[in-house]
Image (tube, rainbow, N blue to C red; front, side, top):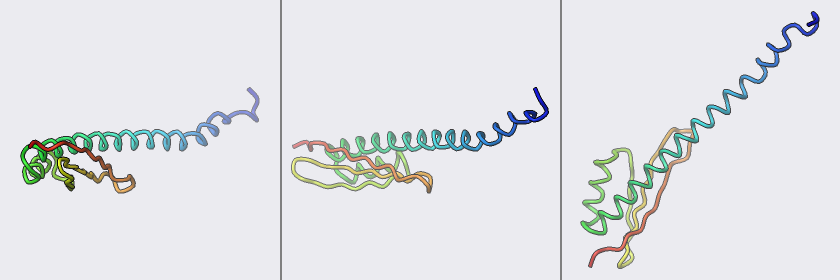
Length: 106
């Protein structure tokens, strides 16, 4: 290896390292958001099922007991009830929202 090439690998590594760290950070952020999205979907399903059987008051209590930072809204179109759950995550990521519809028991 000549004297002109000494340190070139170190310089190339120093140039590439920030990009690698950024990509790894984005992957972890995407995985975290996906986890929030799955949790919102599960909570929306819980809320819709509970609202269909026991009413929206019981569904709100069930969601609050399962996750305190979740917000839930309901809409009714007989015989259906629709639950929308929103979870706020990290400030730089969008909120995870899920909507589930269930048929009310008559």
